[in-house]
Image 1 (cartoon, rainbow, N blue to C red):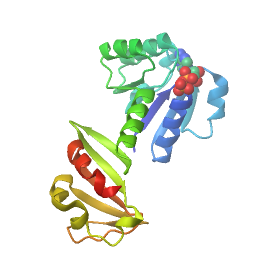
Image 2: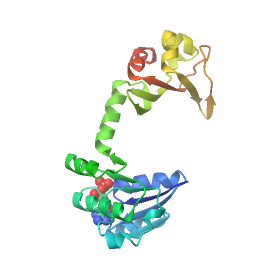
Image 3: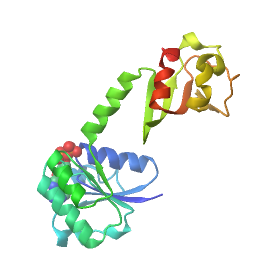
Image 4: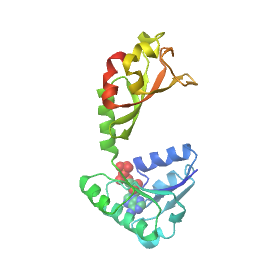
Length: 217
Ligand code: ADP
């Protein structure tokens, strides 16, 4: 379990906070708007009204207790940048910043924060890549063109083995596990039989992934 502080409880900040809570972490939510803080007081571990761009106000929060501080102030670039500087002054361990514009991103990257999040861009890329490979239900990009992907097994593949579906690509795409209802089936081999609506988890480079696309449509 980790402790997070999320500054700015707009749509992005609160969604991130509630998901972290759901995953079993503790979250201090901070916003300069008392109405917003009040709204989430029962849902977060702690919620604080504070103008985070004001260093003396930020000192009131136990920032050093947080493993990661997420700055999710959306449209007010100056407030976001001042908050990052104040957090660095206090000595926050790890800072993640949501950036809305290219200019914001450029400045934040010069400040040397651990991660810059671009929700709209990231989601756009995610959607485009899913559309590019319609059989891919979900994926995680590991960098260097390597992906962990979940493929949906359509009913027309039911009863076939992984060996007959993947043929020579079997060793290239590293089938890891099949999820069937609540069951995880692993390890997999050429004889593993597919059922309709299984989810197949594999790790592959995008070119290898492309080469098996036809087998799953
Ligand atoms: P989103 O796009 O995620 O909805 P918004 O810009 O709408 O982002 O929301 C950002 C939140 O950050 C708002 O709730 C706003 O009150 C809060 N906020 C703005 N400036 C500060 C600040 N200086 N300190 C703390 N919270 C702030």
